[in-house]
Image (tube, rainbow, N blue to C red; front, side):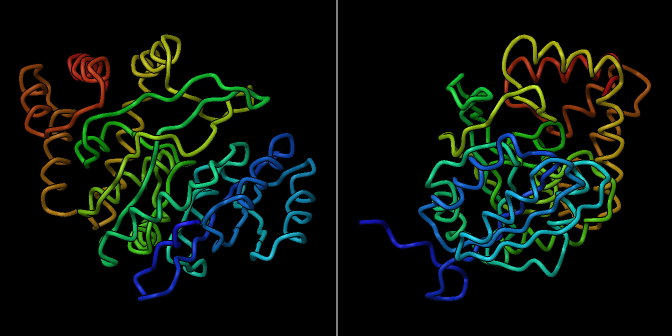
Length: 317
């Protein structure tokens, strides 16, 4: 017998989930993703699709899926300003209303209990508190064959981590209405990535984040990925090249500016952000390291933590 669906903050009412799907020429893999929505053990969902100008059969596939589903499916035109703005436009739209919200890429395959597991945790969080669930992923190739799993993180989710690392892929994220209000309030800001920003702003505002060590979906690795897995020596070397090329400096500039402009940070998060900003600006190595230590920022792995210290020494943060 299937367990009852998690109740929403409205007593006795099942959680209604808005799936936020962004598409762009995704016809090659989209059908498997859509089918995985239909196979969810939590059936109370609606689909909001923002298509960023597809030139293939993406919109046809969505229309066909909508015609065969009892759940509502809405299709809109995206802003055509890249994947981040597309997702943020959906997340920040006050007209999209539900009890929970799930980001979705166009080429993954959700496990049948993805929503149910996320909502079971979210249902235990007070409704006024921003909360976000994310998880590990199973890596598969273009044909859906198993390749392995994403890195397993063990250190606790917190703003001090979110400031320098995103532990949750957007494709795994499910969040509540209080977190959605934070995204609505910050939707116009220039951020690096919708998922990293969600982790940052939820923790910065004093919300809760749960990282599930069990995968919740099959994350397809193929030549058209905008962002792929962070696993392996090649991925680590690629991140090092980005650091030395100054990419991390640009990302931190944008994230810090957005956090400062948001006006949504709790007192402890403001202190962390201030010391991290000082570490980036300090001229002398000793002061950079002191401010970095006082900020409390950390990455999840030893390699990542050493890389953060090295970047600070080289003034590449």
